[in-house]
Amino acid sequence: MLQTLKYLRHETGVWFEITTLLIPGENDSDGEIDALTRWIFRELGPDVPLHFTAFHPDFKMLDRPPTPPSTLRRAREIGLGNGLRYVYTGNVHDEAGGTTTCPACRTALIGRDWYRLTRWELMDGRCPGCGAAVPGVFERRPGRWGPRRLPVWMGA
Image (cartoon, rainbow, N blue to C red; front, side, top):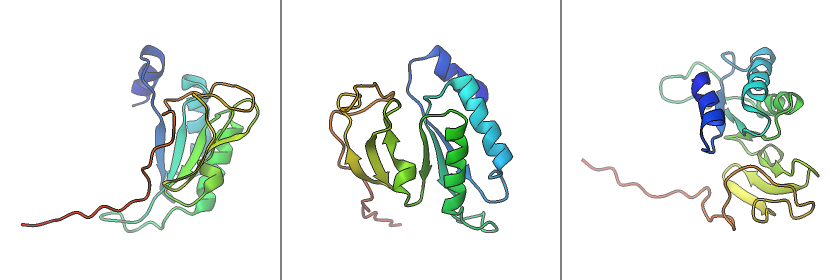
């Protein structure tokens, strides 16, 4: 998998983001998070977005508790401290952890709380305040998707 990430970053033009499910007692130690974020910075660069998402016990893995929001915030701080510019928390309500900021002036550009957009200030992929480019693939205007529930019919 690591070789694939390096290939995507250095040999293709595709946009990708990394999501890591943090499971209490399995992969949520400071050491593991530090090693992961240092590797991403060194091998992929500071602009590849990294999402730390919360585990919720379900289906066959019921012997672990849900990931505390504090663990996600701690992981985010470690990643930011190691030079990554776009580190997010997910699967929890944490607007600060879901917000994209300008890499130059730190202005909040895209605010998110779980699946809901709370702010959209991006202008053609740039910060409207200082004009800095924000890496990514963006629509001109925000979409209308979010935390909708759609009915699903399950019949025999």
